[in-house]
Length: 160
Image 1 (cartoon, rainbow, N blue to C red):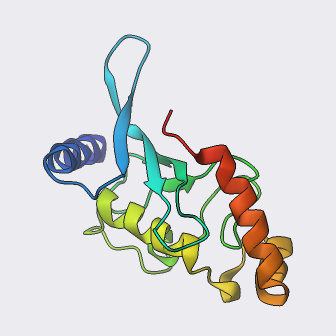
Image 2 (cartoon, rainbow, N blue to C red; image 1 turned 45 degrees about the horizontal axis):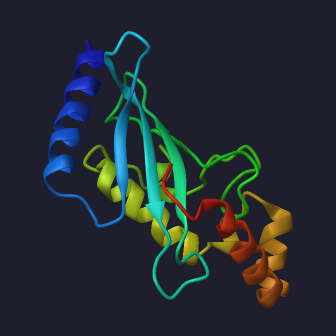
Image 3 (cartoon, one colour; image 1 turned 90 degrees about the vertical axis):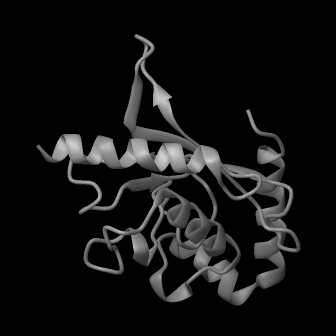
């Protein structure tokens, strides 16, 4: 039964997103090989904020919802190896609003998730590090951290 609730909620979110979404962001459910829409798997793009070392980049994020959504948060992943203190080497995002035991609430929307991840890009939380090596760089050598982030950004200069 909750499966229908998840898909219904995500269909409504998609409709709302298409009418009004933040500039530069992309969020859409995947299309299955048979042409049907998979509302439980979304391909998204988060633009880097102007004035940050992420500026100019368009960062791909995959959202995987389960049948218990919106009662359970989606799994949000950048490509494997994405460099950020709060992104595991697997690409999984570590953010309190995406944690069942943290700040997740069923009222949180795809829009809020993506804006939260965009905010996290430029404002890492060193207390909740997922990539300890890159977190140490962020804390101890901000100039090198910025250089590496900007180098990484060159991989994401266009929306494919």
